[in-house]
Length: 187
Image (cartoon, rainbow, N blue to C red; front, side, top):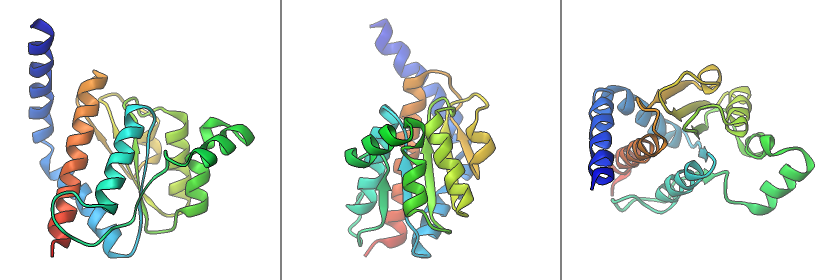
């Protein structure tokens, strides 16, 4: 029972700290709707659990979150195994997301770069490639200063060093942004 209670208490603590950042979260959600309104695409990348979050959030845009609305352009850079394995083999794993941004990203698009450490080489390289294309970059990381701080337009630091708590807040924040998009586009 200790592990259960401890996990819930940690979650509640980090959630309370995130609530104090509601204005920052709302501003970044505004970037989502601005990007989509301008005809841009929202790209997502991350590794491991963050890759799953990237896919989940892209699916919420293309499908829907809650409200009925038109399909919206969201692309998870984590899903095309032929591209991932070819780029990893021919270049390096550090280039798997950046190469896709170089091929698909356009000025005015948005990259959501998800990394609990903020130092994942391939996620940072994607942020660099996006910046070079005049794309905005939202970094989703944990509490520590990181490489993404140098390349993202804005980094939302979750005030925790516990991977599970960071990832929980990343998904909660992503869902809030999806709700903002739904509200904007609701029929």
